[in-house]
Length: 485
Image (cartoon, rainbow, N blue to C red; front, side, top):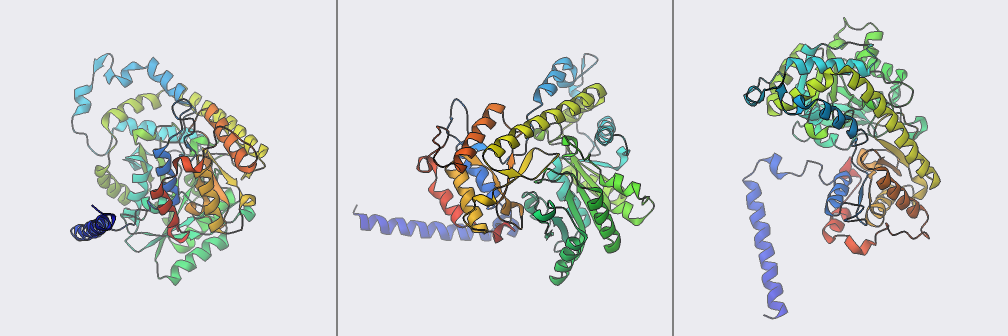
């Protein structure tokens, strides 16, 4: 077959395939056929490239190091030690006898009372027992992703809005919007004050929502912040409370990093802040909701344990019914209820884990400093908010994209660009440091140093031509700052 004939047939085949795809999409729902999941965000694109070529010190030393995953692997040995000393919990036994049949049967979606009791005590312990939590106000969900989405379903109608301070976790564009139809309006925070929330910024975001005819139903914050790694100040919390009182709206405080605080100032929960102002008998008390999980503090994201805590019994009732779409398994509840019941273990774990996080952050920040790179001062979380503005060719998001592509493609580091977190200033990046060994972090630091000092030659720096995929180049070419916003 001649080339011209082959090209003609190939072109015809592609056209037929394209028409077939269009016809197929017409048979699906708008939710299935539209591209509103946010998967085209640079946050997810970096993950896709990492999954094609993951770093391994032995099998693939030139692979990509995952620095875009906020995962806590520093204290697995503590959990493993407890499991080894408490085999009944893992083997599903009680006093030596099997409880398999009991756990294998259908479970009510309210969750095990014993597990919920231990959870609220664990939450109080992390807050220095300055506040108490009622297990009857707790709803179990399959991770915090499900918890946040469930609250959106409970608190807002499609087309209504929640305000979120920037920068914020890129996954919120999926978690809060994709299936609920809720809109996100950014509260623009800047590096001038360490990206702290101000009263004018809250009001400006509210007015912007009004201009677009969006009814604001509440504010959602992460405290400690993802991606900043900072705890909210008392002033910020009071700004938030005053704003919610004035606008008669909800507050959602995502506190999944509350047990990772390793330096002062200490963590203050939204419930504690409201209580200190004696607002328990006001309407605001019923409009305050907490999201929590064991994914970050205990390093158990695969166990899918999340929860909603709310003083609003209508919200608790509705969320409990919705939780039937994403339950926490019976064996997971059984095992973790025994673990959390061991107060000696939980106290030691929290103390030791925070110590290890502090040490790891110091190691990372020291390495960055050696490469001439600074980061925002932080006291919590599993990551640093890294300032690489001086490495941009220009003060634009296009230059940020170019630098990000260079870091991922040429230096084998998957980091999250600030634009994917809706940061208003180009040149900031989130880098995770708790999801790898010290040796791997050392390799990552060597690659960062090589990025800053181009004359350095290191074996870990990968040639762009070795593994850059054509398909991914096409995806990146279509990457646009606005599409991430």
